[in-house]
Length: 146
Image (cartoon, rainbow, N blue to C red; front, side, top):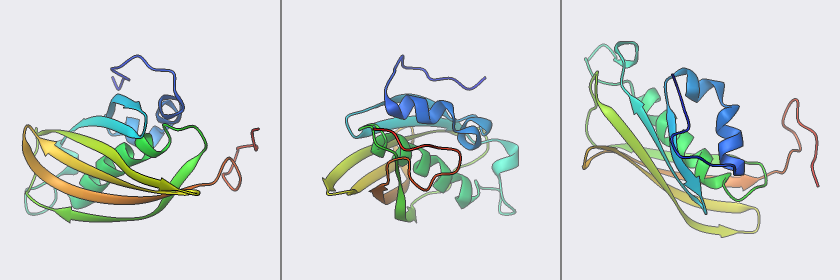
């Protein structure tokens, strides 16, 4: 069901292959590399809130997945240090959303990434994530790599 639609063998692809949360929601990795990524998700009935629009948590998760793929495209394990989201327009059941992440800057072990979630050409969400490279330290089930 969920797939990586661009053949790739980079660190972001490996991370996404192990991301059960994102894949379980039907998110597809379209591309990732060189500080960028794009992912796609269709809004399902289970993702709609009491107002009849996509729950903001799912929209945040989609943007966060693109962010994670972009900041992990360089190799070392990188996690979110923080993020801000602006909900621009509602999404509805059946909408196909694409989140496109772009690296703005990396400095030391930190980085800043912008993600735009689109329905076609309409902006649904703007997201800014701040990353921190941690290597494999501190992540359960992982051992430090050289």
